[in-house]
Length: 540
Image (cartoon, rainbow, N blue to C red):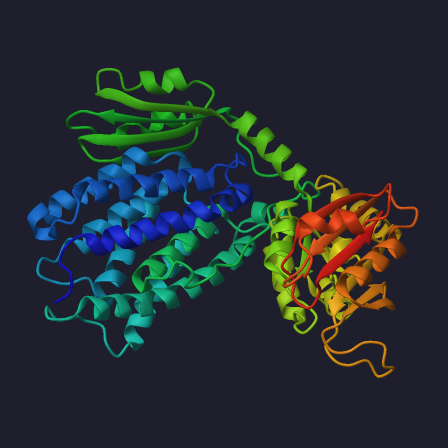
């Protein structure tokens, strides 16, 4: 028999909340409508977290033990109390509409029919909460997801669950439906710039809409028991080169709760709209949530004198938020995609801010792999470090195909790319960074020592012997210690610093490498874990 408790709700809400938390900053950085204050991800996360905490409080009780009406009221109130900003308040109404429908049919298990109905009710509740809804926002995308659920339902072979259905069967049926809804939601998000001019001018999708799709991916992951079930596409924020974002002429984003008896939230709308814009008033006769942008938060609160008790007053300076968002994004204008092999090398690159694509001597990423990585980077401009001569052409083609500004620095070794990364200035433009990194990589002398994969045709070394390279030229072979010393001596002539990246199975420990470095040259050693090469070397 399928689980009649709220445990499934707890599981999917927890997964959705975790999913959104991972992408919260990305959602923040997309936020340009109605005000580019960079808090959409935060506001939606707070709303979802409040619902998750309420479900935790209720524990693993049976739904009918709690009472369906009581459960709906508890979840709707939690979402309302946790909501902040336009996106948070709208999400709270989606939660309320869905909860009301899910709990409206005693004796029925949650199945595709009930889910589709709950999404339709949630979409209606969201639209009703906004006086002048704009298309191309989270309202539009959720409505399209609800429509998708209804359409998919018409073509499903199984749509209802009997009381003796297993919990696994219930999870599978719901996940199958919602995974298809998720894909339609992704397509709807991609269309939002076609529907809202400010998004098109800014070169972004709607932040709240993207956040909803991230939440839906978390719900599907929670049903399938795998948080990595589906990777929602990443979107870069609007860059400083884009036109100005949408803004409000008012300064303060103001949120508060009013509790009382016989409250009529809509009766306050005209007076609130006289004080500002982006006005939302939602709730019931006992509790209402007020949100508006205004220059006079105190006057907005004063409108409710005598109507009820005011709590959870939250006032944010949107001008400061816009300035902080702009400064944060300007500091991250340009980023690097690097092709690497080895867990340690990956960590070194990621610690320096690079986005990593797996590669190596026997495994080269495809044009598609590189293009996907370029698009994943949350920056407007991207440098690609191929770090292998066999990857340069694929990287150049990916850069040509990308919608972003992307440029390949034709670096052909991981160690050279690692040192060149030190010259990256995330706030500088693409051409300047590409020039700096290219010049840095070109100025290095690089080498390596690797075990021979086979006997040398000229008889110099046998399989498993050490072979030392400077650039592509073999300069030493035989014993690992002697080969390493000779190779280091070759690249270290006149150098101040040698960087050594130690690979998988290196026969000399990194703590002993000082003995092989030429006198007067500083050594910097790292554990790279790369296959095929015992040591990767770069001298500067």
